[in-house]
Image (cartoon, rainbow, N blue to C red; front, side, top):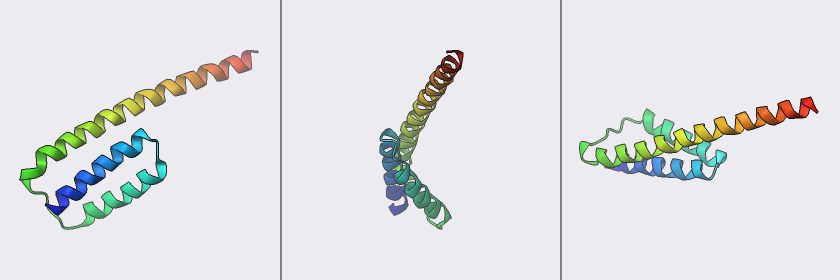
Length: 86
């Protein structure tokens, strides 16, 4: 159960850090998840639904971030072209 709680916490913190664009927090969470992955802890099946829900939420946030980043890149490219045309 400790592994499930740790993973759930990391997923929640990751979603929050992404929504605040907190790179330092995200890097720390990356280290935590790597350590969790390297441990010999096993997930129990009775907490898996909550973890899958949190994972899905994080996927949606990441998809939205990608869409927003793509839009910013297009705007930047458009502005860069206008600057050279002037």
